[in-house]
Image (tube, rainbow, N blue to C red; front, side):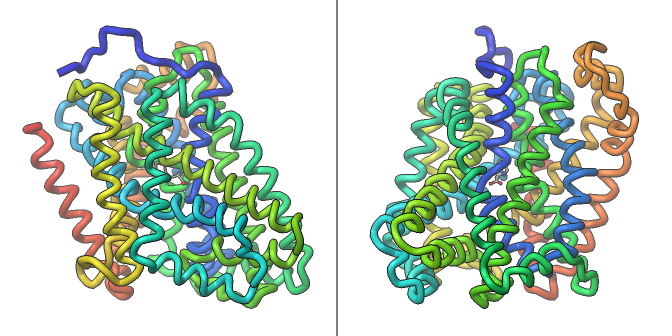
Length: 475
Ligand code: PHE
């Protein structure tokens, strides 16, 4: 077992490189695909407010914790816990499992985005009235989405096989700013449509009568998912980080960028939706229907070019996120199981591709179901509503109760060189408040989940965590 790497660990090439890679992991389908439709289904403004509170008080602190654990231990998700306290290894295994589960559906959506580059290029915008049906027909087709998913996974393999500073870092640095610019164009165009203000009101005017425990859990899950937290992705990225980087500043930058992109995506989507009379609760097809319609409205070659750039940007954003998911699994296999990078990448992505086949087929009503729920939704529910938040809770308990306060302070302040006046506040949030808050939200959300039929799957998630905790000591 290669728990102590003898060669120096691969490092990020530059300061900006790391920030961009971590932001690349955070900014992805979670912001542009998931956030708008989840906000739409959860009532809009009130959801946004709760989400923002979670991002500021929980997301920021958990991200800083993950970076600190990763850089201090210089180990990936599993190794970082194992090297500190063997009994906590299960948190790392939960992370690796989350990596597999998210990669069991994320590449399906990544594949849609890739397909849409070609669909837009092939004249999708010429018949605006058919855009909605065309999406429904495409994702429920048993074969087509699988081909795109396969290509998307191949792109992931190509990036991750080169190691972190070769592939991931370069991809993130060049293409993230482009996406940001295109989103601004989409938002400006959306706001200028007649009837758009109703969309802005929906997004920014909170109506708390729509809030119940499921909405609160959805907001918490969205915060963790969007910021890539709770499964060791940021621990893994932090483990490749040099000792002199400023963790607090990096965290602040990544959290702000991620949140800005999510809000921007909301501003881009909701006004257009209201203008086109699309239901806010329309679900996972939202971006793939609203954005093409918006650019069809713009008309001509310009509209098509913008739509093309949008889906190229979305695909790249998805890619810089999914490579971080794959990297969690790959770095575990390399660090703890002694596999070569190549074997680890091909082995892990084969399993992920098989999971994605089930996920994709389930959208056309094919394949097995659990408690009446298809594979796509099962993988999504387990991670988004259970594993990430509970994983984040354990990461905080681990840092607060199993690491020494002075070690953490040294790590975060670079041995006193960086000042972090809020250290005490952060420490108490991590040690007491966050574990307690997450436990309450998860408990209430899961109980509430029984009304919508999601409860059994969430309970299954808790059972899986219990099993992992029991068997991981023997691994
Ligand atoms: N944050 C990514 C997104 O928003 C998804 C992700 C989740 C990546 C967890 C890594 C870990 O698309």
